[in-house]
Amino acid sequence: MQTNCHTISYGTSEIAFNLTYSDRETLEIAVYPDQAVWVTAPDDASLTDIEEKVRKRARWIVKQKRYFGRFEQTKDEFEYISGETHRYLGRQYRLKVIQIENGEKETVKLKGQFLRICTRQKGNTRHTKELLDRWYRNHATKKFNERFDLCLQNLQKYDIPTPELQLYKMDKRWGSYTASGKVLLNPDLVKHPTYCIDYVIVHELCHTKYPHHDKKFYQLLNTVLPDWQKRKHKLERFS
Image (cartoon, rainbow, N blue to C red; front, top):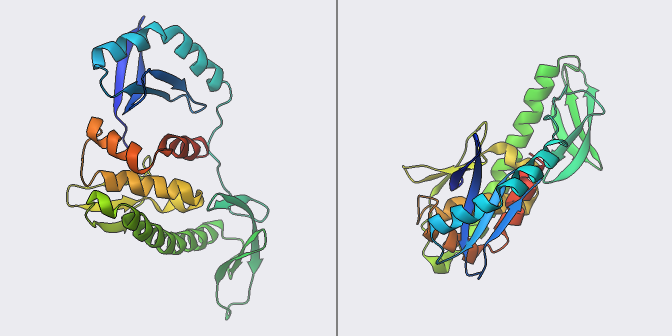
């Protein structure tokens, strides 16, 4: 998802920061393990004053970003073989790939701490990946529809319209609200906890009223989901 991002100059480089507003009296600057800089400002703060305060803390921000940068990890590269760890709804499961006879049905099932993949082509890791991806997508469809309906119910008093929900694979986004009035959710989101799924859904539903990441959008998001920043950072940290 896109964020309301601003930048300030610092020496020969720039510092990007995400800006939100709340009814707090003072400005808060936070740097998170993903190196994202978040600024929470009072509702009546001007952008000029905000940028000036961020500029005054620029040295500290750069120091924090460098510190967290030391712990960066590359994304998992799966081989789709027995023993690997894969996630579903925030929990980790061990992959167990089982060879079956040609006449038997191929299945993917959760059993205890294992994701059991019964396949007629155990040595074909591409086929194993296809089976697992299909399982994730089927479960994402069911889970997303369930949470989508519940989130809409909880937002009824804010006059949120009912957009169409669609699964759509995206490289760098968990969700999107389109100009045609659809909410798109990345099927990979089902690997994360339910409260993270709810955050993405609520974020996109808020866009049905306010398409841009402006002050009104964040005021609504802060009202309907006060802990949304914690959910967002949890999602990004384990992405």
